[in-house]
Image (cartoon, rainbow, N blue to C red; front, top):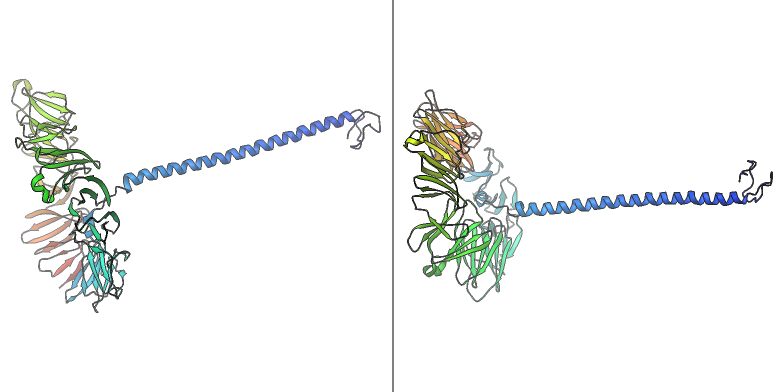
Length: 570
């Protein structure tokens, strides 16, 4: 302890300075206070640091929990809107990236090839089926049966079963004890067919298992969609259309969307209702009608379904109820005329009324007192002089109008222009010729008899000028044949030149697995051109056949891949 009077050091126990006699007790008390204050400050500082650290950790946990909650929410939304509504295209289940071909020198043997025309396996099979959902039933030289995938891998080995039979996209197998089972394409057991029997449903897209006390409805993979208790000996009534299964049992109707493997509707009614039609513009809209034996007496009973709910039941009002260009159309039982059902589901104007031309149930064009009136949401939005209606394009929601001969109009007679549903002209041009808009959303227009080009639905010019343009189309495929003084060319949907024709070429177009090919005939020979890859595949064929897997000739002597390579030739 240091004496404040003389500055000399004393022992900590001293009360009086041994050098000058100064009282040291006040210094001791003060030092204790200072030590307490220092320790207190250290404690407080340590507490603050601990508290801050704990708060920091708590904040980190809160942030982490928030991120997890947001992630789960986003995941659920994604699942609901994308994964949960993912639709199966059943047509794709019949397609494969591999195929079998006969050995041209020994037609008892079949070899597996991939899409490039390369042989996948060196060993042959002696009996094969088509690929269904990427697998095929095959037999070896000893006539033992197995299941193979498109890569050549054995999914079910030879000798595993005595017999394998396809049931839609499932398989009925018989083991060495002669017991029968239903399995999926991966050999996963779905049902014991000693305890269950399969009903004949004449569809690949679902199955029905029958037990002593219940029926099980399975999707194409074997997943259970519904289980219902048996009542007496009656069987469920079924109907399949447009990917929907309507099932009726014990006065209850069940509607399944097989493309998403879900039951979407259930209602009680003494009559069986089947799918009549589906709105191509909005597949959530479905029309059901009474079917089966009851249809003789109640064939005009309909139910209009939207978003998995019955919005309207229509009885003895319409001879026919269906969709046309996205609209709900009723052929009236009273006068046999067609009416549109408006958005409030009451019959609106006649579709056969020559003064009205509709694009939707609430947007249409009407001739009123020598003027053209545009209606949107049942309200007049614009009125025009000097035009008559030529046609409507329901795919592009545009009206094509034609100018009339009237002094006050100051317009050339017989010229065409396009207007949207608000009555607004899509561009400033008038055309001597204008086709209706096609499935590509394009129109062929001409400003005179020698100058034609393509415009899109926004009125933009998308091609060069030509002396001639016409369609090359098959079903939903639309290309254009254009010509000028120098050459003839094929245009794609964007107005781009994709192929130049030679003299005497005659062209057509075909689609295989969603890809489009030009078929070019010159005199007696055919060439096949891959449009997407700008590749000439085969030339100089005397005949041709396009299959899902390869190109061949009518006599079957030559086979080519869709890469243009020769696979085999006799």
